[in-house]
Length: 145
Image (spheres, rainbow, N blue to C red):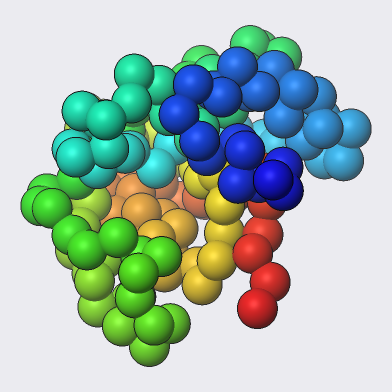
């Protein structure tokens, strides 16, 4: 089983420390006020106790000495992005995220896997509309088609 698929399987959130070490080996600490993450959808929340993106965000926050805060919530249930063709993914996540609390100026947004960029773009847009002046997106893996 490829590592990325293992990363997303149930119970393997324990890989977050290893994933954080791999990210740290490749990237410098970004200038940010806070780290946040793509929130899991409600159905997945019920299926799993922990999720890759929040787990990775917490690990990176600990290592970088940067607060990790949940700054986004989902506004509705959507189809899973993986089940959609690339052309439909942007519409599926349009206006999907709403800010939670006060949004700092500089935010690092963590997603576990970047495929089309639609989810990360929708989340970053919600953060910018709520006051963030800089949003850096970091992912553990990138899907290549």
